[in-house]
Length: 141
Image (cartoon, rainbow, N blue to C red; front, side, top):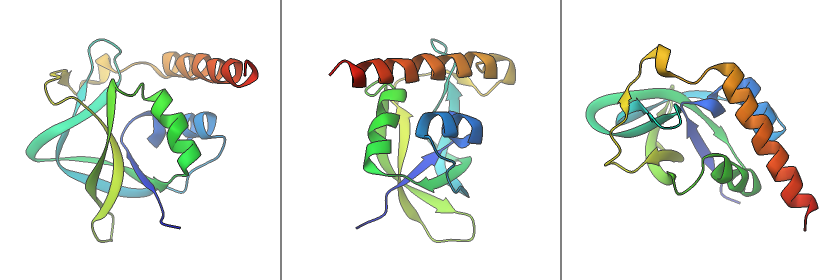
């Protein structure tokens, strides 16, 4: 079976958040997404990436299962975020195709400014609410 990799630069690159969303601790590898930049969505205050020639986004990659990917699609609010396959360069490795969550390239957002990023407390509350909605939907079947 072919391995599936996810490049992350936001909530899922944080071990605590990933543990809560995936019910496991991913084995991360540092990586770089070339020709992209990080922006902040002014509506939800979460990060997103978009094409930007000559720039790069530092992040992490990890192996992910199809069922985990489906859960992350829900967390990333697809189609608000788009799941694309992009070329990523792992630290000390060769180019790897990974899933990456981006936003429509017409989305402007703001540059990465620490005071605009959603707080850990607010992200944890978002994750708690998200996981509760997952539990309710699973039990409601």
